[in-house]
Image (tube, rainbow, N blue to C red; front, side, top):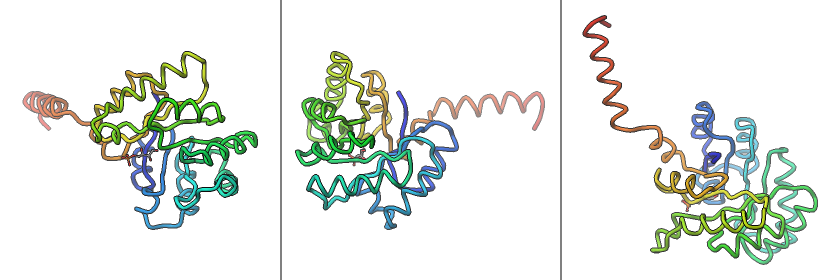
Length: 217
Ligand code: E4P
């Protein structure tokens, strides 16, 4: 499973890119708004850091297919690595069909059922983003959604890649990897939590003490 970072924060992206663990970035209107900066400026900066797929979403106020298509072309023109993120609506599917025919990569977001993922894939989406934790938070196992999409895409050899999204804990990442998601997009704080383990810290301290007892500092 490939790992993307789910943020529009430049410092966080730079930090994780330096570790070599991420190979793509996803953003959304909430994440862009959190930075309080111009969309194009932030996205351009991200493309200069990470050499991999960068998802930039059409405006949260855009609902018509023709407007999504126009914005999608502008987003794609920013950099060859750009992926146009489009919400899972009827108008969104129309836009995906047109953009796909033009060779523009798309990521259909806000997927909450296997049927939505199937429709997005058939419209030509390069990626689908099923949201795991938002389902967990309404007492519905989000991992079932990921597993079902993986099964359906495998049954029919569908090439659309699954980006497991809405990740709120390291255990979600493990679950997605076991379920066979192609990619997991992870917030910075969760990537940091994945690095650490108390037994690793204790082990480092024990090695240090044993070493110093014989060889000194
Ligand atoms: C997906 O690409 C979204 O940006 C993101 O994963 C949503 O996560 P949230 O449910 O924590 O907002």
